[in-house]
Image (cartoon, rainbow over all chains, first blue to last red; front, side):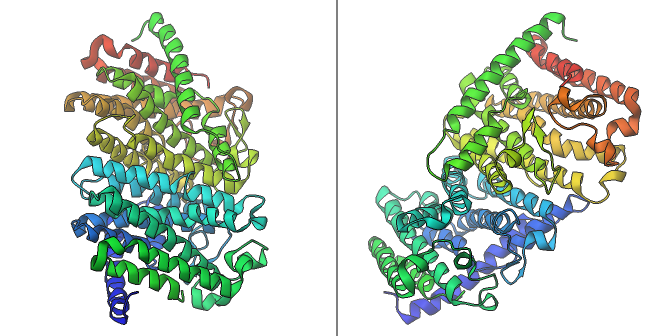
Length: 301
Length: 301
């Protein structure tokens, strides 16, 4: 278990890296003039809105296990964050979750309009692959190609898009624990897992290290989602910067609904312990990844 | 100018290649069970609906100039068609063009629902990059990476997404000829140009050949769009399999509106001649690309 020192170190490293990611996104999504400028403006509105930048952090911290050039890791991290931001824009659309509030601000379709929001999501999704295809991400094209294959797998119908489909499909409300676990493994878990895998790909990690990171990410991603459910049921919109209690009100099955508040907390705790257990092979080098798991458990937003 | 023989050869090659592309898409987008199956079903509905498969044909025919393995060209062609199909799904959405009819059938959001259509578009867009990142597309990862960079550039905010933004932005109705030409260069031209460039990338073409193909594609793409405007103003929905006369009814500036029917026809003819002129360096090998330009001029759907 990480010490208090690790937690405080994590907090400053998280903040520093979040700033670096925002600066990189700002540079990659440079404003343009003319009528086309509107979609870039909407992409920037969503991508530069802040947030914890957890996925980029995982890319960078996993990469640091293998002494990857931080410049390469940051570039790759920006691509992963673009995918995350696109998914938030499309998930918030009226036809999907119909959310007006995100990160304490109007969602993209409220700030702009629905068509612009759809296009901004499409633009960010596309740009993520442009970023990974750039030699700035890594000079070795086989590594770039592996990153692209992995990100596409994690984001598409076999991953995030598939998870979102399950989340809005008929039968969603009645999912059992295995069904919800599968939904979340796809909807949020796949991208979190890729974020950790990306570090292993960039660092040409051996199979054992890659597998350890995947297992860490799997447990971390599920713990993250259970905590999300707990926050959704226990917090106010002001605290979270987004609507709360919507799943419950809609009668959707959630981890909290199925396990109870205490049961969900216990499950998240166990998962975080297991996540940290997978990091043992990296010893001290994985200290911040351990602290991240603890942070995910204790986060309030 | 291509002879009647070239035109008849083109017609059979087009049909044969369209079938091969549909078969490849069918295999790449294999159905899956469970609630996630719905988004794959919607992806298949749109991608397997047929159409001329002009962009895949351009990939394959350009590739054949450089004796590229047809298997690689076909794989790359399927990725380009996925991007085209995703763009049709999203462009047809209620928040965009709000079209109910496409290729003679209900559009994806009418056949399924809006959320599923958005996700199906996202899924196809993502899968296109997975397809290009696969060694089946080309064994050399630097070629795969170049293809991905080119496709992302052509499809994103600097290309197709940017063009669609201009097409729905305020000020669209009052565009002049230069404005419409720019809109179309982005909205439809960029992907057509990439289709031809892809052949050059797969074939490691020299700069001169690559440039000739780009210029051919630029003129072809613009001619294609002018003919689209002509068909939109002169055909019935039954003939085209999609709504007609919408741009005119909405007061949008079009090539036909700005140049008149005869002026637009003459402009398309000149562009097709110029397109063919750029192919001179390939001599007989480019016969079908020449015939394609003629076909684009004379097409009725």
